[in-house]
Length: 281
Length: 142
Image 1 (cartoon, rainbow over the protein chains, first blue to last red):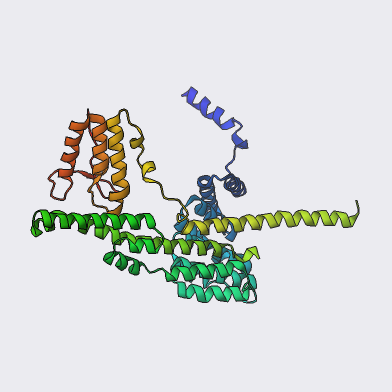
Image 2: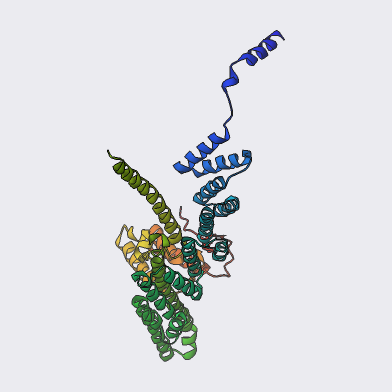
């Protein structure tokens, strides 16, 4: 009993008063350090903790938390906190920046419609920079959504407003887009249905085109050989299933080749669009 | 140092620091945008001979001939076909591996056995590869 009392007394008088818990400022400092170092898991934990204990969370804190989630790849959570940050922000320019980041997050997860909707919250009254960026992001969203009609409309408005009509990049985009529109996957497919390999050759895939032509021709030759050597029925039973298989493979490949070509043109156009970011002018 | 000179230096430093920050932000933005779509279109197609590493490992002339036949089949015949084999690895890959590991006779027998099982009526139960949705049936040789 005496030992227990003594233990309690010793513990009570021990100099533990210098120990203290982490303050909110220290948590913020730690979170910022972790964010700078790229340890986003730690920065997320620290910012979440700070938000829990802080009386009124600032827009900056939500923004940093959203950025941490974005860098970590958890885009849905990032969007949620970008939303919080934009609601808390009073400065129009900062609020616009947050919304653009939210739009970028939506684009990165291929939610193109949501990205377009999010841009409606941008306040671009008397703010030409915000207006240009809004137009640019909107046109990118339409391009990625493959709504090229809307893209053309918005992007040409952006180009006129930015005074970039004589820019080489813009004319290159137009050329690539026109080329992409001229590609006809169904035409390539039907050409290969009637003359195997021609659809592939039409869009520059000579190797596959000639390959398909040679394979189909040799199967047709084999079919006639069977008819002459054996009978019509035997030709049908033995060769036709193989012909059907490779003929179908050929015309499907022709369509694929055309789609690939179209995609290549669109990719080149997209690369040029990225070079026309408003911040680069 | 005159006051004008000091102001100039401070202004240059400020512009460079803030300019750099905004530039890196734009670069980051562009990196995200370029990764969304079309970033794989510039990737060159892998040649057939580089897709199958085991064709380069031949210990005798017979294996070399079979590897050549395999490459011919994959380049000029199989390439013209849609996906038709139900297994992973495909029957041709399986047969080549079997010939290499079990010899010509036993390996070819094993290959034909695999071909006879390559249909939807095959009674065996196989695990399904979640990525390709094909039946998993690797060569099992003691």
